[in-house]
Image (tube, rainbow, N blue to C red; front, side, top):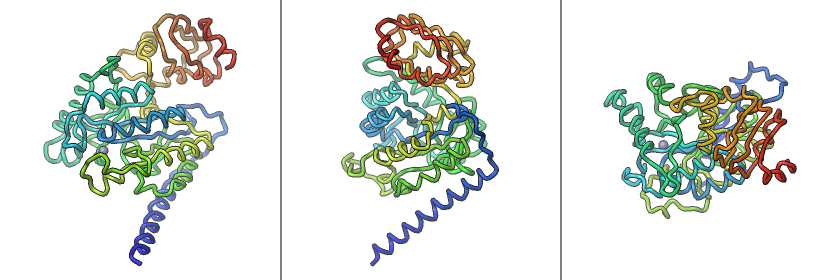
Length: 383
Ligand SMILES: [Zn+2]
């Protein structure tokens, strides 16, 4: 009897929670008129971003995330700390750092989530804003600068976004860290929860952890609202774990809540499928903030040189959209990832590199002339 009552209660809370979200979203898009123009990725084509928090989850992000997102060709954002957030805040092992760099080399964004995952409002109230920036923001930058992959020596890229631990923040904090340290900072529910392109400042997100999203189809309406408004949605979660994986296997003593802060590959898959049906795009938080990221550092440095963007600046996507010709000849480039931002590109030279995958070129509607090596010819014909 009691279990039945609890179930009814949970269903009611669920219903109330999601219906409240739908109503606020509906309200926020009431005055929006949707144009019939062709939607362009990164500037007008609505999309979703997956965002995962807490360094304690690196192992499962890597174990399930790389394959899952790789299969669907989706990039996600992983928000990390400078220490392991559960095991007594120990330092990260080199293995964990390698895993994060592997996520990065698969095109995912590695973003900040506070050096020690402190609650910003509480910490600032006790020690002041200057110390919070010193201990949580600057310390994470310095820590990341020191890390590299044990084998290929790869480093972390310039950070673009931040995710507030416990969704705790204030307007004053935002002003201190944006744009000095980050382009965007992810919060929780804000207004209609839809996000404009090229956003600067704090952006909302919706949590899809299993205790909040018990029924995956609850996101369907949300995706439709974003699609109608031609805006973006960020879905936040923590661990990526199949339903059958048990928390206890990690050997951690966890509160009930910590154990539930997870989503399963099945749910992620479901959301990806539904978003695809609506012809939505998949972005990282950085991309919603209008910042381009590249997998291949050689490609990135070519772009910086051509557009005179110094190392300490973000490469803004709209700057790349005006480029019509790009000469990447003999630059030791392996991956063309990042070329998708050059939507007005007409002429491209990629000869004398080590590029093997040309599929991204299909995303460039105006590209007419591609100069490439002989060995890529077959692939290009198929395209
Ligand atoms: Zn967190």
